[in-house]
Image 1 (tube, rainbow, N blue to C red):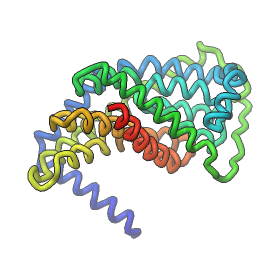
Image 2 (cartoon, rainbow, N blue to C red):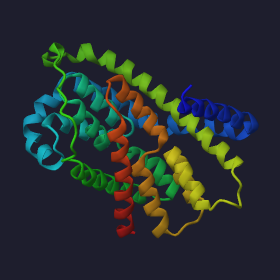
Image 3 (cartoon, rainbow, N blue to C red):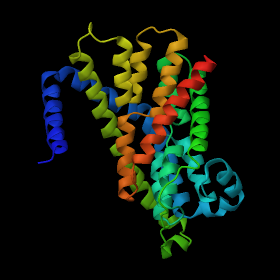
Length: 308
């Protein structure tokens, strides 16, 4: 048996023991995750996800590709077909950007390499989440809007840094249906079903990682670990819980703001698992996406430090 597989088994058993030893934090975390999804994430993501999927399947990105070709090539080294998924991903929020990048690849509009880079560029926290959840946690919707601007700037700068990234040339998928026009009446029911399943996966992932964060908060020693380190660990796992932990420390704005921006730029393991599922269904590797988000987290921290 491979060592990596053995480690995964022991990690899973440790997680089960953690939940059994701390049942109250587990239940509180699940309730918090379900409330977050029902109050903020699903209402802001679901309608946009349905109609964005319709646009991709109806090949609307091809209609706008000519106008956006020069700008996308100059800035990001991506074809014009990536412009519409990029815009919808930035406005829709996690994990819509990755889902649209995978859909564009399966439709034959992007190569595998371009789809992987587009996923890193477009898979961002939406304005509804940053103004609602993050802005409320940090005490001001204005702060949430500033974080959205920083995220946008960091994503653009990271995309520019990656536009000349070398990789193996990959042939673009060629599918007959990718060149056909699809009617809205045919694609809308399918997109509603797919978006509903995506919301269920989102809810499960958020509830699970909220439970993990609450259990770790109860299990980790309170005196031996620096509070900022604990909050950072929670932010690596799940974005909302990490920002809430930072807020509870009473940090100065010059520290709180850059750390929150870095967490938003990274996204969290919770988001990355959802992204991995969307990309794996289209046979797109996730390695370049994770490298992109790591660089974006650093760029976000630098920009927020200057602004604060």
